Length: 399
Image 1: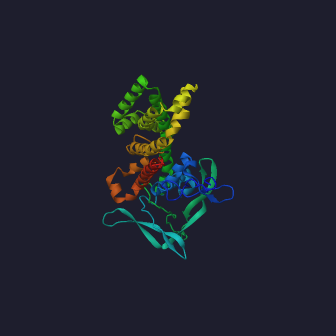
Image 2 (image 1 turned 90 degrees about the horizontal axis):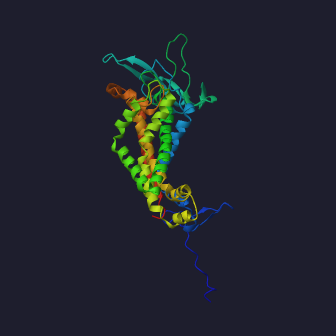
Image 3 (image 1 turned 135 degrees about the vertical axis):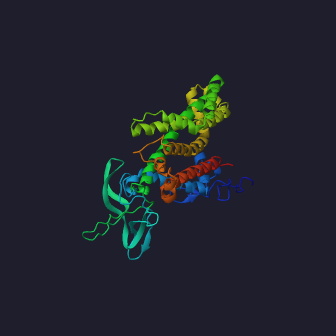
């Protein structure tokens, strides 16, 4: 009789259980079905819990937008990074307006000299609205230096000038202009390509150095471990910023912009790998004597296979967290060096290079829009930090 009684089915993943969701897609008929918790892989559990971390998801979306700006800088920026509008030095940000007749528009700027301070200032002309156009044909450019295009994300209609008049052409400075009349927004978008790529390439070098040296230190142990750890302690003993300044000052001044770019990236990576190496070493020390690692060695697996095939995948999520939290350090390092004139230099456009215009206190006082790259730097650093926190919380889906 006991065999004839219906058996109770195992518990399924429900929305009340922490870290899991109600259903996963069936994939056959387009319906949803409940899945036992034990049937989910480690990455599925991490993904389910990460989606519950709203701040981390919002940060991931913000980083996606920033990197989209970097990848598609040419069509998004209304002007080239070196385009000068000599009639509009230190032009303030132009405001946006909307009405049913003219749609989204801004007003033309007129420059005048203050009779008291004799400082050049600007005033908007409501009588001369400039309509904002989207995906309109403009000045030709090459996407990634390869694909010729002419359409930009937004621009303004040409200004109607009476015959014989000498007014300046129509412009739209979303974040104002610098002392040469260059659009700050366009330069910030182009600068994102350099600053964000420095962070990603620097983390790639950090990943290789930290993974190899940290894994070797934890797996081999003994004298090798002692030598590597003493080296890490020596590197960490130096203050990073003065050491960065000293090493970057050794770079030849006649190097090309590309050579300086990769040199600064490599320099920042050489001083940023120690944290990841410590994390990898600690995890390897705790896992190298596990039964599956010992069994792999007894079956004849090479040391490289045991290390990279069996040990490192066991804490991949921790490596991702460490890398995510190290990107802001590389970006801030490049910004600091470029701001001091020891990192990237013009004609390269990066956020740190743009902040060189803010060294003059008077410029910051009268033209605060020159600090616009600071907002992008702060937003990028906070987004990476929040993303790292979310990944760290989701790395233990059974917690």
